[in-house]
Length: 386
Ligand SMILES: O=C(O)CCC(=O)C(=O)O
Image 1 (cartoon, rainbow, N blue to C red):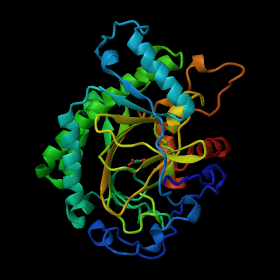
Image 2: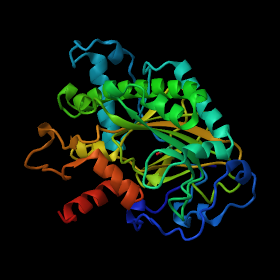
Image 3: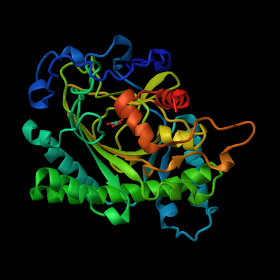
Image 4: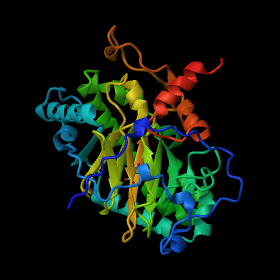
């Protein structure tokens, strides 16, 4: 029997401020090889009652957008070709409802996706001490994090992550490879190569999706594409170990992505949930598809026309789960402001000018990303003494 999982809207909840420096004692270590078999979980991983996962979340109806014809049409193809019009129509529909859609026939080879999953498995299989050689430093957005035990002291996520930067800047062509080799030695060159290639593919795909987003908003097809050229993005590998108390915790807590566009590939295990119409709904894994969603920065760029949507990941007691997330972000000093087409007297500017580096710093140093990040950031910018 399907159990309804209607919960209190997180909009009504108090937005916690980042508890920087509040960790008095040595933070606990999240070592999945020891924790995943224990019958009880440490208190720091236990979430408040009204935020705990529901037993079953009905599937969300997300459009499946076939990019084959759109991608095979050359750049000279008019924006009115029927496959392009249909793709941008579906995107508009999804982004007006919840901001999540799936893309298939996206042009990324199965082999590359499978390699990216294999290397992710190899990385998280390494002993904790090895992974800790990439440990994320305080105030930084990249590196290895065993949960966020060093950063927060409550509502910890049941996961490990590895995040790294990808710059689509031809003059800095080997950023990902350098990252792995510099930190872990030349034996990790194959890791670096796979993720360099994967990030390049994600960046190209996201620029094509930007064309469709532009068309769907009635903006010049190249406007957002050009805005994100030379993007300074973040790639994240998520590993959710099995948990003996999955009903008490979350793999990733509820949040909207502060970034611009997320392209996610889930393995075959359920876990991703989106909060739509006051209800948590799941997006089932589809190995042939990428899950795409709008983030806060694009919400600001679209002058609030397209909203970023609250989502989370749940865990389970039997299977581990993994996902690959590419977060498209503008070049650090690009000023985020909507194009003229999205402004008029009825819809004036909704957010002040900002750069991605300002928003990133806000989420690293002052605020734990949730569903109010963009509004909190906008208020902070507006009220900040000059
Ligand atoms: O693993 C997932 O399905 C979601 C991950 C996510 O939301 C994140 O990494 O921000």
